[in-house]
Image (cartoon, rainbow over all chains, first blue to last red; front, side):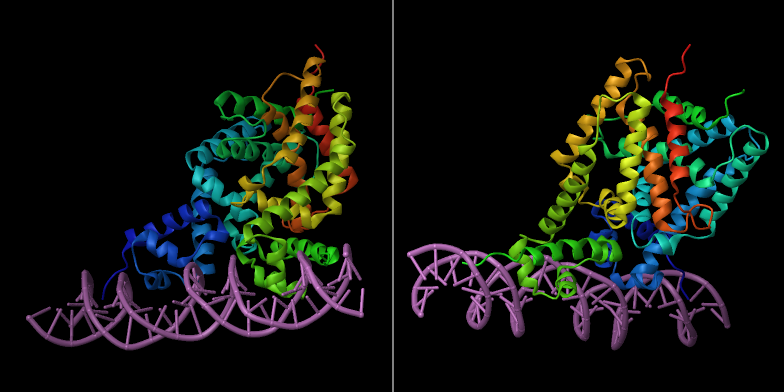
Amino acid sequence: MRNRDADKQQLVKQKAIELLVKDGFEGFSVNKLAKACGISVATIYIYYKDKDDLIVQVAIEEATRLTNEILADFNPELPFAEGIRQQWRSRTKQLLENPMSAVFFEQLRSSTYQDKVHGSIVSQFKDAMGKFMHNAIERGEIDPLPLEVYWSVAYAPMYNLIRFHNEGKSIAGRNFKLTEEIMSQTCELVIKALKKTPA
Amino acid sequence: MRNRDADKQQLVKQKAIELLVKDGFEGFSVNKLAKACGISVATIYIYYKDKDDLIVQVAIEEATRLTNEILADFNPELPFAEGIRQQWRSRTKQLLENPMSAVFFEQLRSSTYQDKVHGSIVSQFKDAMGKFMHNAIERGEIDPLPLEVYWSVAYAPMYNLIRFHNEGKSIAGRNFKLTEEIMSQTCELVIKALKKTPA
DNA sequence: AAAATAAATGAATATTCATTCACTTAAAGA
DNA sequence: TCTTTAAGTGAATGAATATTCATTTATTTT
């Protein structure tokens, strides 16, 4: 017998994300990936059933890695403002430290693979999110609204800023750099948006 | 002489967007497009230099159409809250009436074609946006912040809600439908986020 | 050390791809 | 009406694509 080369498998995964980010889903091919890894195409077909399986598995593994990292220090019992601040900090840090993954998931979300990846890990995260919001409503910190509204108001701005940051050139034409200060100022804006003003 | 069949050209444009949305950029091909239109591939190469040119031109034309529609009733002199409400109303209406375009631009933004499309039309819109925000700062209605922050806080939630709406199944697993009421509630939240509270 | 076996490979395959070309067709202007 | 000319075509081209296969290689087990 002979064991699979774990390093080689890891290399394939990493290079796959690299290539997908560089050339987009439309420019990606298994042959190119093999060449980039310096291995035979046939080897990739030992690891993965086909191209779709490759992309889906790579996406799920990367999503799992990042989501677990976030869930580890997610606390749904925190007071609303504290919770939002904590999530902004950890997620922003993570995405700035993994810019390739950030772009990759951006691409994935608007590709035809989106449906195939939408699995249990993501929903696990969403459950925690839902619980956090529910607690805040129970405590009377925020008004009851659909979860989609909270999500959109509380986090969409963050992902948007990170996209601006990663794209380099953003809306105003000049170079936008996401600093700790901008991040924290914006976070306070979304808290203000959602938090009930005491009567 | 003989004139180009304008209907045929229009059909190509429309079917191109249809196919790109259905199969993604990765599943799109010129041969498929020709078949879907019921014409010869060679005809498409009369209209467009190559595949890239086709996608870029189709994207620019569609972006121009939508942006001009929005700019027509954009008034940068409006008071801040009024202006935001007006923009939310018109853009939401437009994207819900053109769900295919909404998805198309979502895909385009995170594809390798994004750079090639980033042209004068979009920047024209951004200029108007910048002017609007500048006015609001001058009048003391909002605090001075980078344009990217305003953009992210004021509009990213809207695009996010529309994505949830178009995807059908959204964050909470159930079917999310963007109503007039949810839209207007969320709009008020982002106004609250950005508007200065009088001392 | 030999046998057993899965990993890994290089070279194939059939298909799909973008693009071209020699040709036909339709209509505008003479 | 006839000539001119660009529009439109069907069938081809070669390159790239996903996937397979017969074979070799490395490593574990005996």
